[in-house]
Length: 224
Image 1 (cartoon, rainbow, N blue to C red):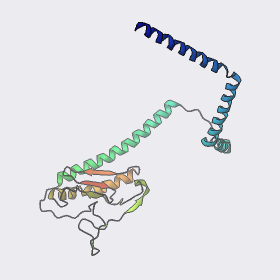
Image 2 (image 1 turned 30 degrees about the vertical axis):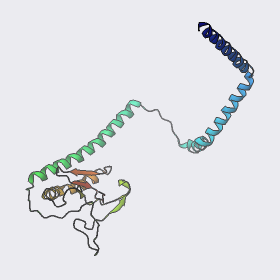
Image 3 (image 1 turned 180 degrees about the vertical axis):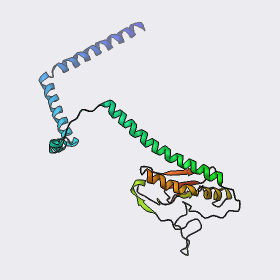
Image 4 (image 1 turned 180 degrees about the horizontal axis):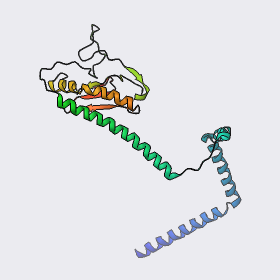
């Protein structure tokens, strides 16, 4: 058994050594000039592809067109960072003030609102607005709600003069808790509008009640 194993290893080493010699010999047959030629060809092809698809030539042409009016200035990195920080602080400060106005108004409205279990109150339900019955009449809580496409709000059709209400589908639209909450939060509508006028960079503003309804500004039609 040992003799057979040694013979196998000897045979393997002979074959491996022969293969390496053949591989080395084959490599030595490729002249360095040929390899250099291949490299130059590949380089030229890559350069041609890059020039065609990168738009470098067009960029250089446009750069020459505006070169007379371009001015290079040295900028202080620390000063730029400070300016960016101040700008971010102003932006976040504006958003925080908007949120605080909403919070203060909601707290005051809740403080002075007296719960009325028999309250009857119609509001714009975001799932139902602009919905008509078979006779062409607006359904309950689905009254006429003007909408206009607005680029600032992702080109959605919205109403920047009013907010509307979304109620979970498993909650009764006229539950006393819902009606009282919606009635109480009507005061937020003016704050929504005022916030947007003061800071046009604002997008969606919300008020979410613990009873489950959701007041959304600007108003729009939502799906279940």
